[in-house]
Amino acid sequence: MLVSYSKMETHTNTQKTIDGRKNRRKGAEFETKVRKDLESEGWIVDKFNSKWNGERYAPAKYNKFRWGTTGFPDFIVIKPLLTGHYKVRFIECKYSGVLSKAEKEILQIMVSQGLECFVASKKGNSIWYEEIMLQKASKEV
Image (cartoon, rainbow, N blue to C red; front, side, top):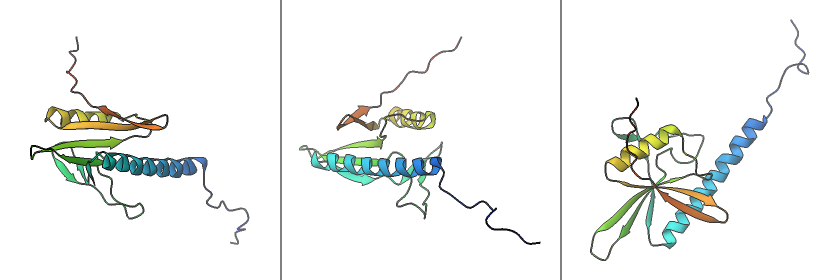
């Protein structure tokens, strides 16, 4: 049986694929801006390469098609204090500032364990850092 190649569908970039690439690029550029901002404020910034798996932190998955890993939160930042101690924070970068339900739950668990967690988001031309506060469980009737 002969097949006409002109009638076969070929792979084309759909709008969803194009938007996904733009969003990843915009997110990566925003992470770079956040890193530079924190470093300019005297923080030591490191990419956080672990993920919460529901019980403990586990190594993040490596994706050979994208640079780096997919840790959550994005950064662990450390600032030496004059007392000889260190201040440690966890930073999740979100260009729009919107977290998924799973991300909110993970950050709540981290905060309940006494960790300082922040979400970095873009507001106008500046970067805003919003501290995640512990939410009390609501009672259902």
